[in-house]
Length: 163
Image (cartoon, rainbow, N blue to C red; front, top):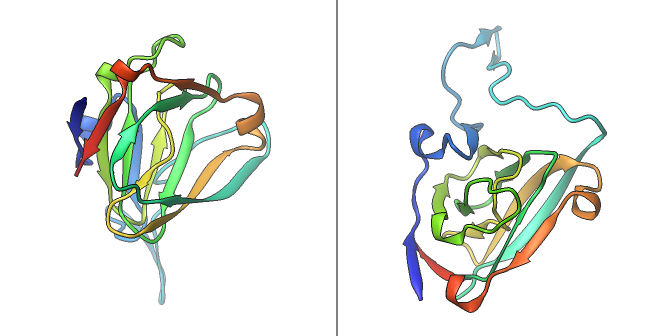
């Protein structure tokens, strides 16, 4: 079975799949007051419908074997890992034909808001250290029901992620 190594998240490596910003260690220009520093508009997105903020809990598997992926044809997905660093696997948009051989895996630090561009293959994030990852998924309301294509990989296309 093919194995891919999860790599550190960098802007250059992740750029084909989306963008990100560390919300717990903000940097760059800020608007400052007596008690606050405000870092405006660090990650933006607009949806044509109501936005939903949905918690996800993901148990840490003994082996990070990836057997499926999903994509959304009309919307990017935003994820915020809350209690742990997370592993996020992504593959390029490919007009609905899975490309598991092009998958990359990234280690996203806890507190880093990450955006997955429209049509990028991915699935649920995985915890790095904790037994269960707590994360926030941000998508248009009901995306899971009306814009989510999940594909099961053939046995020969499945792979394992190593940290």
